Each structure stands twice: as structure tokens, then as C-alpha cells.
Image (cartoon, rainbow, N blue to C red):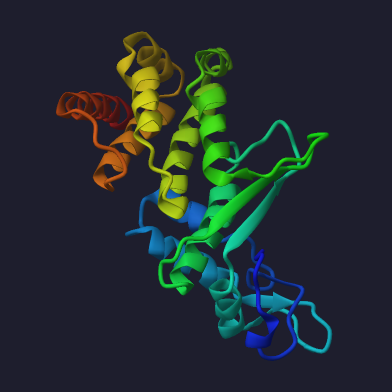
Length: 254
């Protein structure tokens, strides 16, 4: 997890890893992002830390599945870089919610414990013949360009019908997840998503017909990005998004 942990600063036997409470699964960060019930990135980092403060393994500890919050805090405080391995070419950081809910949230948890000092993330794509670590921000930019904002990808998703619309919707939720946990809030991503999936009348109508709930979520996440201060489009764009949201909300609610 960390590239510069000073073990002399950490007392007692170290576990093999930290994870969720025994018998439970998930950081709960993705649930917070999904519901919108969170205040800021610091809260998301705290959620990850609270859920993952249970230690497992480690010689001499004699304990497994026991909360060791202070030890985890010590490790997070000495973390300056996180390594995330991606071992499948089909699924990247923007495809699966667990990436922002864990990798992004670990980054934020470490920064919380380091008094706000930035923690870097290296992404290693293990399926490549020549493994080249990339910075998190560069990887996200590449994935947004090649998938979410790629017209060929968008068209392929729409051709899949309701399920494809759902996939697009999930990636809009992920933009909020990465913005909240990793502070990735580049305007061009939200501009491009709004242009392609909401302001393009033909695409908007297709998504609305295929899966109105997914289309509503796309609009909701764009409006949320503005509300949280991640994106500041022209007022006319916000008005159009709100109008579309209100219309599809009326359709769904009857």
C-alpha cells in the first residue's frame, strides 16, 4: 500500500493486511457516492478508514479480524504513494466502482492522516508486456477519452439498449467518485459528458427511451458535479440540464 513506511515508527507486530469487519465486504464508499449522502472527500476517506481498520494475519499477533485503528492510522500517515495493479484489459479504473471506492478512498484516507499532504497513486497495467507505471491522473484522462467521451464507445453502448444506457450512467457516477476521493475534477470531462449524453438532443432522446432511470442519473450526476463545486459550466447549460432532469423525473414518477 505504501512506498515509504518507517516500521520503527510502528509498534507491535504488523498484520498481513487490513480489511473489512469479519464476514462483511466493501468500503461503503461506493454506497455513499451512489446515495449522494456525503459532505466532502474527507468524509469518504474517513469511511474507508473506519471500514478497513480490521487486521488479518501477521506473525505473532495472535489476532485476526480485530480492529486496530491506531496502527492503520500510523501506516496511512507514512504513506506517500499507493500502487494499484490493473490485471485485465477489459476493465479499467472507470469501469468498476470498487476502484474509486478503494484506491481513491485510500488516497484520501492517507491524506487525511497526513494533514492534507498529497499522496500519489501509480497505476500498473500488469497485462502489458512492458509494464509502465502511470500516474492516476494520466490513467483517468486516457480512460475518459477512450471510453466515456469516445463517440464510438458511446454508440456501441446505446446499441446494447437499456443495459448500455446503464453502463453510461454508471460511469457518470464514477466521475463523482473520482472527483470526491482523488480530487480529479477536470472541467473538460464534465463538459464532454454533458455535450455527448445530455445536450445532444438525439442522444438524449435515445437514452431517455432506452432507460429513463439511467438518463435521470446521468443528469443528476452532472448537476451534482456543479453543486459540489467540481464543475462550473455556463448558466444556460445548467438550466438545460435541470429542465431535462425535471422532465424525465416527471415521466418516471408519473
